[in-house]
Image (cartoon, rainbow, N blue to C red):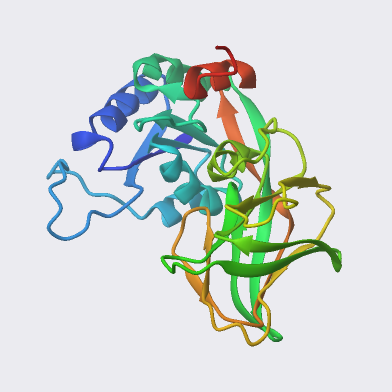
Length: 290
């Protein structure tokens, strides 16, 4: 079994956690490859073992069986698209603050020994296809595990957007923006903006307005079969920015539209600790107890 260890060097100093995981996995008979999730920016003080070389993650995924990510939720999201396209399951080891998507904490590394022996289960997570259009021209196309966010950026003025489901108006939003999230993304930005918490194995599309300047506009949960369209009014000179899973923002103009549908792809997350979703909420978010 080939297992890729993808570490965020800003979180995993000196890649010590990844190297400890490699020792555990190779003792159990696995073949490992150590990659970096993010290449350090020039001038950043990052500890990296000088004697090591790091093959590109995209190349290693072509022959991998499993992927273990070391970092926060952003590290997992960064790897999710390529891993999903290669049908490689992911296990996250939390090196950040919350790490809601991570299966293990740093202190639980010995549990990785189960992987080479197939002692784990897979949990499928719904994804979204996100396309941006200018007229009939496709500006961008991406996969989202967490969410697609349309926001007004740093402008002090409010943004105006129309949200449609299968060509029927759902809401007209005047405010800071809107979030289209998966159940996995329900505990991220959508929750902070007042959206509902949804069990991650569910199948639905969440539409959550951000700081809407209207009393009647509320978050909604839509069927996964809907095609959600967000349109910027024609002639609107205000610029809107689209970001998928926290990636680089795409600037949109009046008349542009974004179409979001349930993807045929699903992200497969590895489970070895078998904690319930409600245990994780209590641990990571403080739960609902006083």
